[in-house]
Image (cartoon, helix red, strand yellow):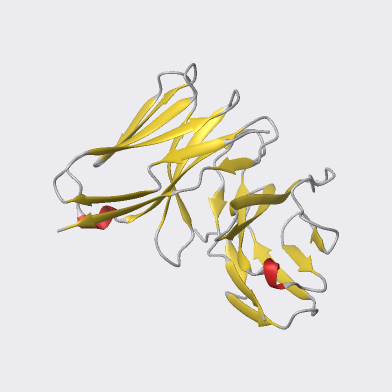
Length: 114
Length: 110
């Protein structure tokens, strides 16, 4: 079946602009995660959603970052007033539930802030 | 704060040789995962280890977990070029998030 999909695959933006990254999880997966992969910081957790529960936002690096998940499916990660240090690959993952199920990762969005 | 450390970070080996990648973590964990990442690609799940003494094998890769030592190993047997990739271990605690190691970049040379 279809895996996790993300769009766009690549995004180049100018410092100070806002960007939106999209994630479509695997159908039927109730848990959705965002991670960031950068050269300096490795793989970092950002945020996760489970059903209608309040999201765990504890990994978001600043208040410029926000995410929402509509209808328990598609999620959008928004970065406002982008900075060069936001340049990274943003990975989305989904799983059947938060109760220790394997997380399946999407192909990522490569973000470059000039 | 949970810390996950892998070693080595870079590994260059010849085809046919054996080697082990180590993953140490600093606190009690509910699950440990191994993922593979090819250049420019996403993460592919290899193994999930659930309990002390767990051992999983797939082809030339075998993963094990010692929860008392807070150590997991990924053993490579008779390496082939197709195994060249970056391997990550990741620890999952009750908060469900994954905490990743730094990754081990493996290059298998003919």
